[in-house]
Image 1 (cartoon, rainbow, N blue to C red):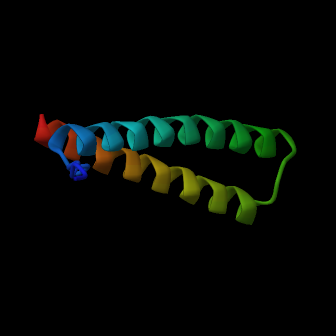
Image 2 (tube, one colour):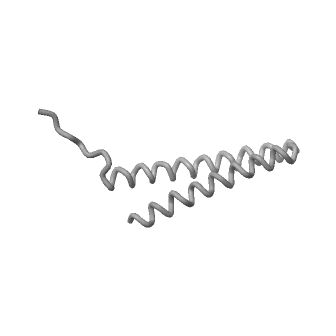
Length: 73
């Protein structure tokens, strides 16, 4: 007889959310570095606007996930 494991426990979900938050934080840092590199190369304003929007979206996603984590604690 096999055991059924509940993989949707609160702790498991919280850990997954924390992992996502950590990954988003790393992506934000990398995106900021990429933007700096493009700024040094005097990239066109369209590219810079697009990259800045992407960074803003990552920050918004990080904030949203962090809010959920804080509510569940």
